[in-house]
Length: 505
Image (cartoon, rainbow, N blue to C red):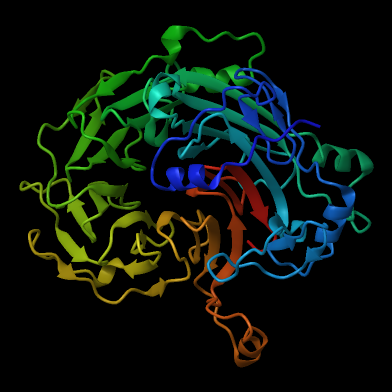
């Protein structure tokens, strides 16, 4: 069994929550570049690494599997199991109690940590097919690290392949699969990683996959990385992805250099970044802490051209930005000025068409539904998240944002800031929400309780019926649904990465 990394102290956790970078472990040779919370062993980059899923005692795991379906259960010092739903912000742990996931609530669950936190990442589409339901699963992703300030030169962009992701162990007496198929489903997970040096911490990273333009120009995968230094780096990670499945392939330093380094933000830090889903060759939006938004387009010659004139209107930092899923020239932005604004690239004034005040606190995140394009979800610093019907939003003066009409739905379940929000890629009523209370919650807006169900849940206070699931992940910062493996989520935070699929979605 491998040793676990030491748990962070309360002081270290407070520093992380305040935005400080963590100190890198210096003197523990047992800690590799990656380490799995469930006794997974991760060694160094560019190596294939065996990764177990659950290294706990059989008694503990069996006790969990006899649970009542709660997402998280309590484990005391004496390893006694208190099988009740634990709701962060409502319940508190007693001395000697820790949280442990209820295995019966998950179809798949894997957790791992990295040397430095990766507080932004993106899931990549692959060629393995859509609507995959078989195990073991394979996921490709890209993430940017956030090292402590004194070690900033160690930052990197990590291109990752996670394979052998097995389902949770269950009683297979009723399974139709053969023993060989069962053994394959329980294969050991493997993590492979390719490193691209950055030299600066990553605030946000997003990927874009360009279709082939001709037989001589195959499909490519691009990434855009917003760094703490105020630069936007564009990389072609196609060779790194190819290397995972090409034995003996060696990457050259040239292949890890950026295609372009964009400096239009003039050293101003930013967090807002999005690729257009409707411009195959690549069109990029970036927003900074001064409230400026720039548009960068890939030219026919393969270069990158940024409009010299920014879109302006926000009076504070642009926290999130997204292209419309259905309108090629339309995008939305969310800001710490409490507004959401809708823009049109064809506007000669470069000012927003719609400016609405939706919160008295920072609006941190937003997500535009890919299935129902008039629905927009937002999350704010006060822990509230809401869904808006854009058909109810009317043009307003850019300099005087109007009060927003009532949202379609609004929830104040979370007690800390909302850090990520994303619509399910195919279910137009399901939303994933991450928050500073160390939870990632799943919601179904279509759920309504009848009278009998309301009586059954009367003992659970302050829990909306639309809440499907609560997953615990320390200091979770960002979450994304996998577009090709239904119901599968990947998330990252100060406590590492989590990949899971629940039995409820």
